[in-house]
Length: 93
Image (tube, rainbow, N blue to C red):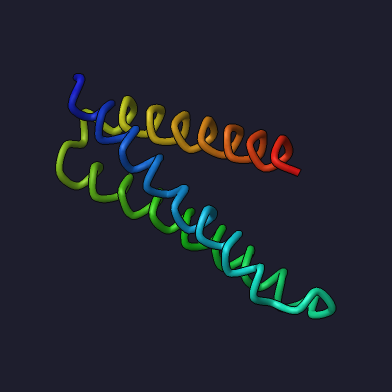
């Protein structure tokens, strides 16, 4: 029971990487190019969701009885990561 939870936390944290990387890519986009700014963040969100969904589908295929703890840990770790990321971004500015 502990292994799916640990793997869920790992993949939830891994899904934060595209969002974190997108903040560095946005600095290269000119401030007047709002479509470019939007595209970077939408792609980062899409890649993050793809990581979460693919990991969930793989867990479902390998160990169907462990999907619920994996999914809860994955989503909880992702949400905690997003909240911590947003708070640290607000505090820095």
